[in-house]
Length: 111
Length: 110
Image (tube, rainbow over all chains, first blue to last red):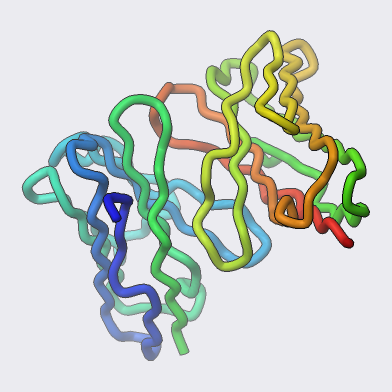
């Protein structure tokens, strides 16, 4: 399968803990995006990379969130000091030109 | 006001029926328009792009009305497998930062 992959698929953590998610985009896709989706809502944009450069961060991405794409391939999204409001599906997408292809998401539950 | 608004539904229709629904967007500078499909607890998948002149893909027809800032999707001859949430998606800086509606749920019954 050469689609976007994300790991882990599910994560349960206690409030205050740190979590890190990984996204592997489709090979040769230079653009990578992170979105967050809560129940009953559409995905909301978090941040965007072109190659290794992070070009925009949403206001939704508080100081507790950090994303990296160190070699322009895979990306990580870290949430520090998790809060219950962080519970959501975290979706990664990649694109070369035009269409964004989504990974299966990481479902986070903060207890 | 949300950037993209959709009727959440649900639209419950029998197999073979036609179902249609709209979404509206607030940014008149929007450049690209899409319909994505999302099955329960799965990722969104591109259903079709929406072009100014309207376009068709099999049983699916999409229309764009820039003057009124709305997009529509029509599904003909509904199949059970069409049951899903349909997400209206807009962006105003191509290939970047998609804005999603909350989705319209369609359930096709036998």
